Image (tube, rainbow, N blue to C red; front, side, top):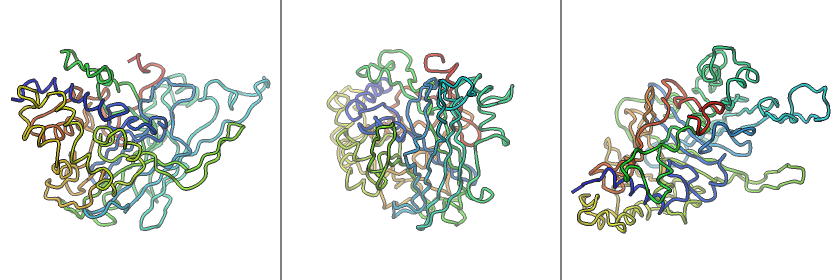
Length: 469
């Protein structure tokens, strides 16, 4: 019998997290020891789905941003190479298309603080938004060995600090909100075209609400989830922001210049993943300066949600972040075929007679080994007739069919729901999708936008900082 699965599965969720993760139970928030110390380069969530005649890709970085964390508010790193990778077809995970995004901040002018005649501005200020520094970025497309700059010196949306900053520093007119000014209004929006006349799509970069949701506090209190205790789960990611690179790409561009035809097709199926890289060598100078040298070294990556977080063991999480998806079967295949989370559940007695997972097909004896079904489902094999042979941690999207996880991953616009990937993956790993295994938190704390970039506006530091919501 699958009795009491709803609340016991919440405890099992927490158990799996404690056994396999060094970070928060969210899609990929500080999930590995090394990247936990480098948040600006930390991939958190990746979304990719077909929206009308476009492919939308949202790559999130910098987990759990407190909106009120001034005076040095969160931002993208000028020293990180952010990349979005697209593989095409069923037989290769090599990049067919790569979008490289580099950021550059204007420095604060150095001003003598004893010069009382100096106007407001420069590095002498306490309030960084008055100092005069801004951040910009360049988007470069790499295809068939050719690099093409699609957008240059595009402004990043600034931190959503509060109404006085909006009025005094950002010069937003009265009656206009932060979101209206920086996103919605065509005259002032930081959304910009890619390529000549927008032929390559559109781009946005800046802070957004973190659309993931989970009861972190209860998870880390030794699995004392409210679903177990009879209370109400609390979304501990509520009120936090992330930094998002959002791309809206015409389907013909994503499909290599070919028009997309309706219907399932291996040839029209792509694999999307995002990464962050730093230079191999960094030298710190005496005058608060640093030089970076050498080749780019990947320090973070993300394709499917929750893979490094909940499938890969602690001993291999840093290695996972530094490797390419094409090598995942060789490097990490044992984790997929023999899910550690099932063995932990067995240890806790959940598959024993009368346990909450006792009715799962085959029981722990079968669920903990030879799980080719896991690989088939995450690669889209067995769904829509696909025959994918290149297996790795990429988010597969069939461009000719409606997107629904694991065929892409989308946000549910105009609602406070995203596709509940946590429930889907737990149900797959623990019970072969024979019964739902929910985590107890199913809604976001904000409503997703109807239009690009789709994620909800960032929370405001002044009145919506953590603890004020």
